[in-house]
Image (cartoon, rainbow, N blue to C red):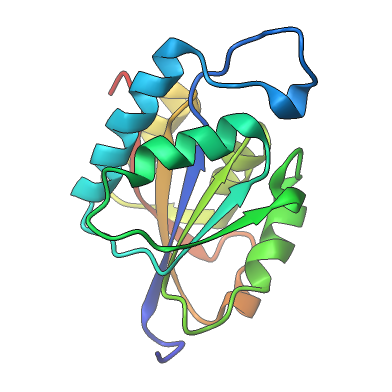
Length: 172
């Protein structure tokens, strides 16, 4: 694949988590979260994006979100469970995405707030339609996702290079 072809990144926040007396990393999804994860999976499948790679935090709630969402996809992408996504800053997430092989065109990252929302804001130097306004108005609730596009190699991904193409949240 040429680095001149557009790439897409989908930043997907895990669905609503429960609060049982377990370490934060091991928190499972709440019942609403399980329903929202499946709905988000259908919405992601409806985008028509063929994901080459999914990067998923190792936290229980992100793994469960991904398992329920990907079940809705026509094809399961290669999935890498990455502990560096848990509690990552936007800069740490960019550094991780910079490691993506250039043969991957479309990448989905399943992570946590505030990092995922901040990364969407930082990468989006431009926006199509009302996507930025909807994301600003709604915030980045559980199970929300943003679709960004950019041109260049993954190593060139940096603040402001992306265009916010779409945004979806469970209450949209």
